[in-house]
Length: 325
Image 1 (cartoon, rainbow, N blue to C red):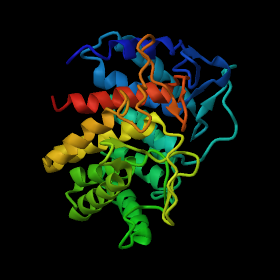
Image 2: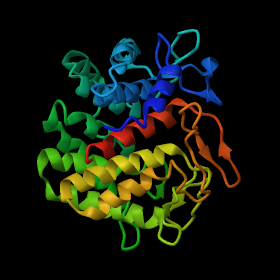
Image 3: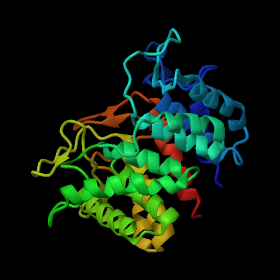
């Protein structure tokens, strides 16, 4: 593996303390007032597990992220946000996406006890929110894989409800972390070999590509959080965030692994290039000094803050591509 993410690894360590990875930054400095969240520490644990063989220094911080997740499970519920005074915020989403992200990370670390405790605390086996189902599916490939069908069928039903001749998606809008949805059905197909999961995964992924890849500019133009892309035709492209590029890389990489269709490998490369300037602003999203990843951009400028989600999306995307080199 090349050493061109050493700066990013060092930045990850920089925004991690003895408690965990700090969620937000002011420029490249951790904003301790904003505290910590489970989602980021779960993804940080995955980065450690996937890259530690080439970057042994990650072995040292791996227990920090794991212990953060362990401490978040209290009284039969998985908390999400930890304040700077190390108290948990009382308002958190029951059965939210952080459950799936945590379970996926625990599956990789092979902690069966904590995985089972958290999974059994879910009071449902489907969700009206597609991204929750998607995160759970990605986790269940490690344990309780026989349950994948329940969650995958829920995601399929949501797709069939919204699918039309001109709209091949799971919701009436395309918002954030979009590629995670076809990624989940690709994962479900890997486990079950259910051809319907593969077909819908590829149909929705191709539709997402059609909407987000600009052939004239030869770059991805992801939905912006000022209004997203809607079924009715609204197309807001600002503000764009690194999370979209990262999940796209991971999904195209898996699609290539399963189908061997080179177009998906090429799309994985082009979505990764979003970080280095192949985007609508032609803006380099990598801080060459700190190694951090800028949090996104609007129609005029780049957001100079470099939070946890941004660097984690980059490192997970990098790892996905490295698997094919």
